[in-house]
Length: 451
Image 1 (cartoon, helix red, strand yellow):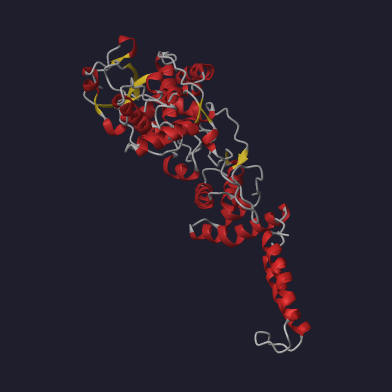
Image 2 (tube, one colour):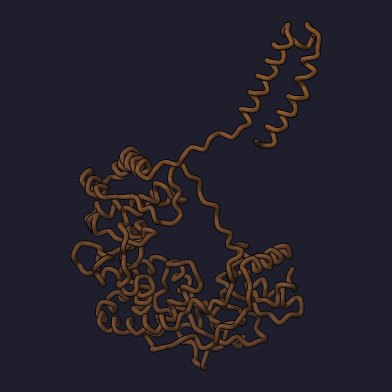
């Protein structure tokens, strides 16, 4: 019995006795008898009690019931939408013949259930970015990449002539995304996309991707039983979502199909085509590891603070190991990039670095691709500066620093417990103004200082 019901019961006991004691014909009691008055009041109280009781929970539909709803949804919603998009009845019939629900995918909300509460990420650990750069993995990918560069030298040369993207960059993306095509693609992309369009937390996005997947089949590039992908619905060796496939996948081997599942030339050219259309600048590198003197502020990071590489050089910034910047690069814009602040390797990057980020929006991803490409093309190794230890912190610690900087008027980007370039440079600026040697990165020593 909940508190409201207890209160009503107590009220009934206190009220029923005075009603019983009232004389017949009391002006506030419309009925003539004590029993009738008491019965009326009791019925009113019972109605309120019933209204206050929780409704019985409805059992969530069984899997078989949900799968029946899924089939009905495909028939009533997806097939008409596909027909409106120009998909033929033949493609629709073959595409949906074997489609099934994948119950083990993440972020599903089956009918009759409520979305799971988002896990609080603030208690996740915050560490140096160095953990992202597994030396063992990079060495293995570089060794294979150099072998593939030799095997596909003529194809890569033709791709670079066509799209302007160096072969080592294309190979690095291929290696990072699918292990040069060796990664297993265990899921039917149609079933993944249909499952997520029917009962995920991002139904609208996956619904559009499902229609684009049908367009791919309609075009004849792949049959429904061969359109395999990841648990997220990404397709083939470049890991394109269907919408990206329709924009960027190309037939480079001349067989009339853009086959990113089985054709290496098509896979490599499609990656290059993606980067080219995203703005790759022909003839430019991705970036350079550098040494930034202590007198030069690390709070000058970001694509919005670009300046000619020659201007960075005049400040005393030099390539690691004493190498000169390529002469073709000195008059072009470069940007400071310090992913771990003063606690790790430092870089001057070109606009092509941010094009690589279009493939996967992560500074560390773009650095991984750049480093792997350098290993493939030039036999390079790990970044020379070590990744330092920033102490033991949680994302909630970084979030507290971000909120403190925001309160002081700094633009830190998203307050999410992750140290993006706006957070890093804001922190460096605050440190300098408070007589603290700028590190431009959250570390354990700052937890009690920045509040």
